[in-house]
Image (cartoon, rainbow, N blue to C red; front, top):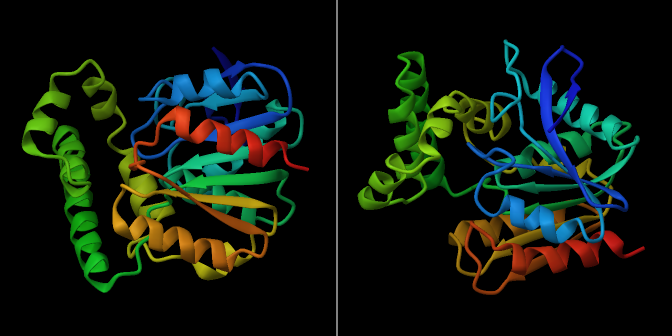
Length: 264
């Protein structure tokens, strides 16, 4: 494990694998560098890139200096780019993709290309109402210190069944998820916003080449959002991954990332 210090003094933990151009992975809600299929994705991508797989602040082995602000996480990405040699490709999954958009939209960004998988903005009016209710309840639970209930709320919101949630509670990763529960507010309130609408103005400022992806077997709004994002950014392309859900497999994702980032 390696570490780098962000501008506000927060220590970020990361792993570095492979050789080639620098590629930084930005994970989504409750995810650290060892979550789900990420290690396998890193293994595959490391054949063509130097992959920087880091724990976002408040997750895994990274620190969590308060107060939180999206700007601090943008500085974290900049610190990772420094560690990677001064410029890098970025791949962002879910709300990590939203954070990556914030970073790429900043003037002077050193991101060469950006790949996004299912950034969970949703412009549907009914979805906005449900999101506001979720945010209100999440805020209350975190204020009360009910981290486990906050994680359950998130899982319920994303459609997990009671049986699936019960299984997660018994899994080895549950303690880490509870520990990272406060970061749900980072992803969902600060980065995505209290309405989770597509931030068209911000997105339009992203001028680097962007690959926007969604899975054909995922939530229907994800495809709609991917289509919207791909039309707003001037240098974006859209790819729908057949049979993939929000939990995209490394086997389906990696070839697209390699082709996109290697294409000159």
